[in-house]
Image (cartoon, rainbow, N blue to C red; front, side, top):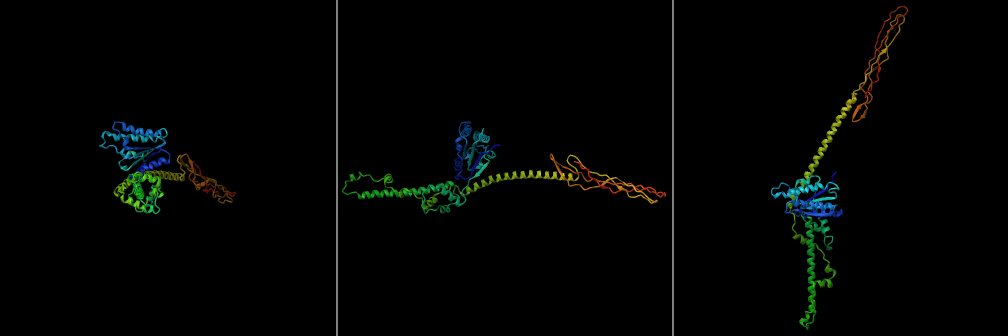
Length: 423
């Protein structure tokens, strides 16, 4: 059984696809190889395919590892493009498909090598890449759709910042639009920090100028001008080394810094572009769900046909058992009774009477049908009901006076007949 080791991240730019791939490799202590699409291209014939082979060979030598293909659509577009001069991209895609198949061959092939791809346009990829066994697991990474998620990202990005006590990240997040990606939030925090640093640097420069002005004002007026130039002014470096306090070195980011950075920041993805990515997402998720529905329908049809066949076989077995018939033969019980009777007459009286039956005759109800499993079919254990008939004879003997002795024959009552049992 081949294990699946390919994952494809897709979604708008700046949503953390590369960061997530690095986090996966770090969390599981795996080596990480990042491959850019243009790095594989070469002007010489056959060298581009050789570069693909070398990437996977390096990965096998360094396993366990993660091979990350960033901007996969640039190296594996749909084949058959007429604008592809010489079919270079088609050969690269074919080589990439062959190497991906080799990644699932166990420890002797690509065991311990996991392949992750990232793209903004999965609709441009060659469809052969998305079949099971290659990049069959697709994960959509979108923008934050709630202010709580945006606040969580801001808290992670500002964990090393010195924030002003009056600053509220929840209040900042509540003012952000839902078009901000992770990269936009990172830019927002960076710009806010730069504004805080700029403000603090301006404050330090003002202090340095003030110190130099005070020193110049405190110098004696009778001092020769050339002697005044012998004492150098205070520089910024000198200020930080000898005169700065904690208040001067500690940069506090305020809420005003964030709001000012927000006013200057332009989102990297527009509303229309997000709508396009959502449509692409629905297309791929719809295809996946359709495949799952088709698979479930096929399974239900198969199970339903099997259940119908089993039910039909069971009904036939029940009918056969009631009729004393099994899959291998037939069993039928039949009983027959016969009776004899003898009567004596006295004083010339007719002594012919009913004969007394000795035989077996009337049918007896079947016992409850019993099923015995033999190999793969059912066998009726008991036969059907027996049928019986009784017959009696009578004979009369004459008395001394020579009375009429009539011979009479009568049918006797047949006793219940035991049924013959066939298996």
